Image (cartoon, rainbow, N blue to C red; front, side, top):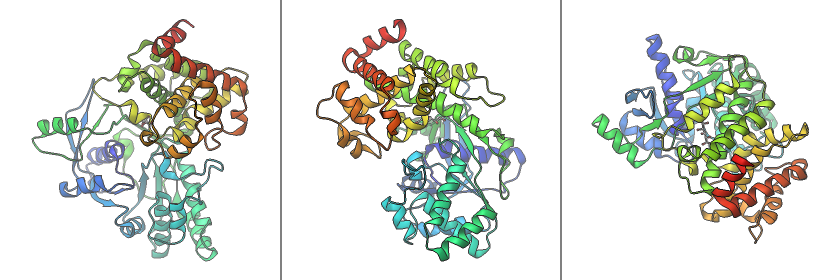
Length: 459
Ligand code: CS2
């Protein structure tokens, strides 16, 4: 579920590599697009084939990936989605639907049943939300004897499997009793939700990328994706039924996925967001451009080492310092063209997971999370300086409504801290944090790049 560039460059590649390693062609992916049908339309006339063009040092030659056997537009064919999830031949459902695709209520951390789309799925229309599709698919599977199923979340959320299980159970629990009880019972016995950590930087494909692929391939491929050479998948070994031999493709099966995910979110994704917002504030269009600025690279290094690392218990086999170094090297890949606008999108859904856990843990131990606060202030600056119609965020309207008329640090910081769907009341009332934010916001807003350089490198 979700056929964006990331799913094509990660899930589809791991699945094909597993088949190549085992010499069996037993698996195939039925891909479902979520909000837009573009990728389904692109893949259908290509028989599901698409190319992956690696960019950067160590890039493999262009390859054509064949593990997607069918592409369905979920919004146009919701019944087909339910049927495919129910089919006995389906053994695993993977999801790459981004943070906002889960429709979580920020106040409870559970399913947002007040969301119009979730409510419509609960009322019984052919489902359009990811959680609704999964729950309705499983309901049909239970009735038709489809057998056990594994649901694998591949999004950057802590405890993504556990969370998905909770959301699906919340959906089931909100159905009328006669439906809810049998579905919950069947779910409990037949469906597992392993946690996973996924990692590969995959920018949005550009027209230039398509032209370059066409030159290499000798064919026009509308669904081509570009990606860095690095890819990683850590999966909890908790499968209810058969699965592709992903370990033969380099996936790591681990008991400690939560620790891997915490490390990735608070180190890699947190620095990624920091670079995106600092870059957007100073006219840097790409992540490699932003990390090429000494001050920003230093800020990332300090945020990871001083603020984030002490909050994480690292999984066995992960060297924290080495990991931080690798992350910065990967960001510097000049061939990737990962834009600060893309990484900076959906900030309201990302900063809590990536930065605020670090902020809270530091504040609890009486430490100032100076660098994580810089990233949050840079996000606030982005929100306050982007015209309403251009802010790419599901909470754009609420964020705009919260903004004061004057855009000074003293006005913007408390106004955005008041957004209860992002900052809990205790954090919003913390004066150490508010002071750090105000200070950094002012530096970004008034002193700009020169001020940031002075303060980060010498201050
Ligand atoms: C990025 C991630 O867009 C973003 O928010 O931080 O998509 C990042 O590229 C991946 O998580 C890397 O694995």
